[in-house]
Each structure stands twice: as C-alpha cells, then as structure tokens.
Amino acid sequence: MKSPLLYALLFAAANAGAQQQPPAPPKDRHGPPQEAIDACKGKKDGDAASAKTPRGDTVQGTCRLVLMPSGPKEREGR
Image 1 (cartoon, rainbow, N blue to C red):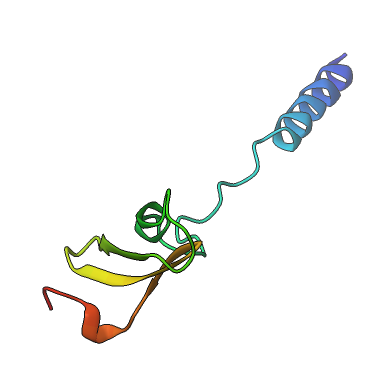
Image 2: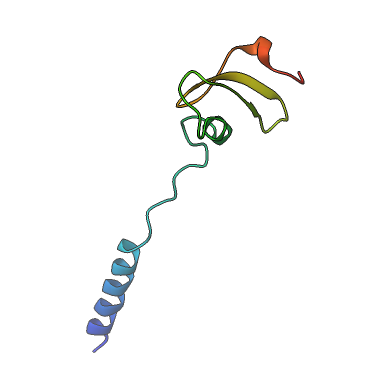
C-alpha cells in the first residue's frame, strides 16, 4: 500500500520541479543605457543631444538611433 503513495509523491515532486519558471535575465544587460535611448526619442539621426549619466555627468553627442557620445572632452562635471 505504501508503494503507490510513494510513487505518487515522487511523481508530484519531479513534476513540480519541471514546472518552475525560467531564471530571470541577468541585471547587467547588454546594449545602450536607457539614458542614451531616452535622449534621442523624437529626434532624427544626426541631431545633437545630451544626457545625464547615473553619476550626474552630462554627455554631449549625436543621435544614431541612440545617443552616441562625441568623446570624453564633451563630458561636463568631471
């Protein structure tokens, strides 16, 4: 009598493990930062734009779908 119950519990445990959610994507995503995307919303390729970094620096650049920094000399606040 204990065998069917044991098999049922083992089956349920194995089935529960198979239905777990996939792991969340890593937080260190690849691609442009959100600030670079937001800086060029509503602008055309070639338009000048600027964005604040999470550290508070301002980056100047040109829109190419997203903000492309002009270079380290264009940063303010460093």
